[in-house]
Image (tube, rainbow, N blue to C red; front, side, top):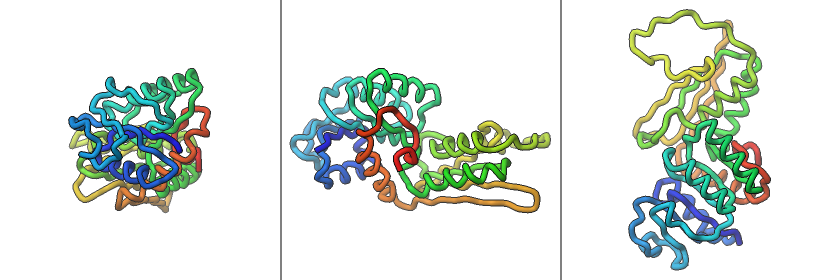
Length: 258
């Protein structure tokens, strides 16, 4: 039985993850962390009596095999560092890690001799979108990305959008330089990742959606994925939990273990 620790257990994804782990006989939920968890009694949160509850990272004193992180961008780097230092295999579902932070964590994982996975998106449809977009970039170097998420998402653009842009940039030939443009409204063209424009939408009613638009002479290609319910991500979470302890390095992307 693999021992699992969940950081950010009170959030929407954290609650789904708690349910997944508690219902699967292959796992034991040994501890949870959330800043708002002021009551140390696990039964207040409908957890097993043996589950330890923490509200500060500095308090965490527990042995676990896997650290599952669904927190916030401001906390995820320190959390993942801690997990690696404590020899817990991190499964990171929190977006917001910067490229240099990921490199630092990968070096630490190598030093500690432990593997883990950073997952921009647990939705299988999102993983396939990134794969298809990477293939399309060989033929359509001109692309833009629109990502749409719920109003409470705390970072922009999404980790999935950044990962998609990175894959497109790696695969495509250099596009033609864009014509000079005068923006009558500042930043109306969105963010820029190596010439790929990214547009972020944050509105009530949405969960997680992404659209990649490719344009070429006389034709266009649109690839889109939609996640309508957070439960759809649990298949990817289960896949990561099942395989993370077999990894020998810290990898990025669910496709690395598909």
